Amino acid sequence: MGRNYKSGHRGGRGVGSGKADTGRRVSSAAQWGAILANEQGEFWDEPELVGAARSGSFVRAPLRCELSPLPDTAQLQFLPGRHPLVWKSGQLTEEAAGNTYLGSFGAGAPSVYRGGLVVAAQLPSGWTRTLLPAWKTVSGAPTLPIFGYTAVFCHKGELWCAAVQTENNPRWDPRAYALPRLNSCIKAVKKALPNNRLLGQLEVCAKEYGCYNAQNIFYGRWEGASPISPQCNARCRGCISKQPDGAPPSPQIRLNFTPTVSEITELGLFHVERAEKALFTFGQGCEGEPLLQAERAAQAIKLIRQQTSKGTLHMNSNGSLPQSAAKLFEAGLDSMRVSMCSAIEETYCAYYRPQGYKFRDVLETIRLGREHGVWISINLLLMPGLNDIPREFEALIDLINRYDVNMVQLRNLNIDPDWLFNQMAPPSEAGVGIPQFIAKLREECPKLRIGSHNPAKEEM
Image: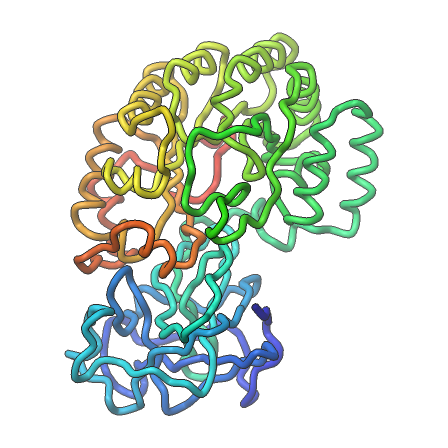
C-alpha cells in the first residue's frame, strides 16, 4: 500500500484550496474528476473521467456540500487490487448521478476503469469523512488494513476529498507532533519516573504508532492517556490492538500487563501537575477495556484528587459495566467518552460483539454518568451510508435527548468497508448524506456539542 502526500502526481497539478459551485449541477464545470494511482505511488487525474463515490451499499456522484479541498496534512494512499468506478465525461446525467445499488448496476451507472488503482485519503484529526472511494475489487486482492478510506477527486486542477471539518483544534494539528525533541522528552520523563512500566508501552505508542496522546505525556501538555487494561469484553470488528486470525491485522500491540495503582497514580499526577489544559485519560487504543480495571482506576482518581485539583480526569470506554463506572463517577471522574457505532442494539452488537454485557448496560452507564454530573460524550464510529440512514440517526437523536448527552465526537470508522459488510448486514437503504446527518443532529439536539476531541474542564 503506497503513500504519497503531494508529490508523484502527473500532469503538473498541485494540491491546494479551491472553489466550486454549490449544489449538484451535471456539467463539466461541476463534475469531480477521477484520481488514479499506480503501484509505484504515483497519482494523477484523467481529464475525461468523472469519479464516483460510495455510501454504504450505494454508489453515486458526490455533492458539493460533501467535499472540501484536501487538507495539507492529509495522506494519500493507493488501494491494491481495486480499480475505480467512473463515468466518462459527458455520460454523467442527473439520473445516473443518484444512488446506484452496488449489486445491480444498470444503464447510466459508473463503469470500472482498469487503467489505474483507486486513491484514498487518510484525514487528519477533526475531519469527518462523508463518502468512501468507489471501486471494483479484482480477484485475490488483499483485505485492506484498518484505516479510514476517504474518496478523493480533482476539480479545476486541485485535489478535493469527501470530508467536512467538524473541529478545528490547533492542539490536534499533526504538525504539532513527532517533533525533533520527542526522544529527549521521552528520556526526561523516564528519568523522572524510572520505575513506571507504563512509560515503556507509551514510548512504543508515541514513536511507532504516532499516538498523539502518548506523545503528549512526554511533551507535558494537553491530553495525555495511559492504558490500564490488557483485557477486553468486546470483540470489535475494527479493533486496533487485537484481532483474531482471518481478520484485518491490528496496527498496534496491546498492553500485556496490568499496571499497579501506584503506577497509574504516579503517571496521572505527574501529567496533570505539569501540563497546560491537562487531561489525563484512562483508556488508550493499545489496550482492552479500562472499565475492567475500574477498582484500580477509582483508587488512582481518589489519590490524585487528594493531592491536586488540577486537570481533567477522563476515561475512554465502551461503557459496558455500569456499576463499575459508578465507582469512577463517585471517585471524582470528570468525563467519560463512550464508544458506539450505532444507537440500535442490533447494529451495535454486530460490530462490537459484546462478551458478558448488553447494549442496555451501555445506556445505563450513560445515565449514571449524567446523574453524577459527569460530562458524557459519545464516540460515534461513523461509516457513510450506515449512520446517516433515517432509522439510525433517529435512534441516535432519541438517545442523545433522552439521556442528556453532552457531546458527540465523530470518528471515522477505520476498516475495509467490503470486509465489514461481509461480516455484518450491509444497509439496504440509502443514507441522507453525512452533512445532512450532522445538520439534523444540530437541529434536533440544540444543546449538543459536535466535535472530535475530549474537552478540558474549563472548555466544557
